[in-house]
Image (cartoon, rainbow, N blue to C red; front, side, top):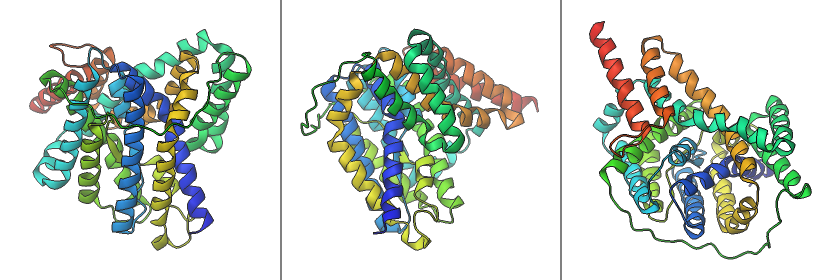
Length: 380
């Protein structure tokens, strides 16, 4: 295997892990996960990504790179009043819906009826509150956060994919050198998988499971397939959806949320810098799987370091990591003129965090946007 293939897979793995691991920890805290359940969550999703990437890349001879759903993690982190067992029920449902989307064509057509602008508005509403919290984090911990923001901006001018990873690296250095964090006792315990029996609550399935499925499809899977197509590869849509959906449903029992197609990190493994022969680039999927396996096994040590960091630093890191997805979501929400007002209503209701009948804001935002879009269509 060429060194360039290995290096591309390594960069893609580190970017995918380092840029959004803080968001996974926020999501786990929001649903009351114990440290053991959080560790199981991270380990399970790392292994699911490794298995799926290796399987699809080898089967289809295409560089398939999987990711955890970053917008999905943001959606989970925004929830309130949901236990870990109830969240697991939503995770399993979302995975099964993704698999059915690939296996049953009419379901895919039904999802396609949701206007892109409204779907993007829901995603923007989920992400916006996290980005707004970044300013408060900078105010409470300026000595750490402002240098991180400066490095993020400068690195992003050259390489956007590495910007959050660079900010995380600087934050780690500053936190420990300025005595803002106590360095933990490093150990290398083997990661443990914890089976969590799901609790099925209709309001949680509607308020978290259904939106998690929709944001994973709209903001991860569809852009992931588009990235493959843009690099000259034929995306295996049905195989990709069935595989990622089943992996998500299985790993959900161990506390992990949805696994999906990657877009930004996938592009790192698909260009001529990875391999001049496009027919050989699928091997990057194998190397990527190997690195994610290693990240999974080293996750207990990594999580212990991150847990020692000041909360404000983690909040700032999450805000920086979600700026790119927020920009993409808002672009998608407001570009189509015929759904612009409906997308605005969707974003506002979702960002408000309002919950009714125990069902979260993402669902009500989607319902408000679809209702308004329907009224506008009738008027026309």
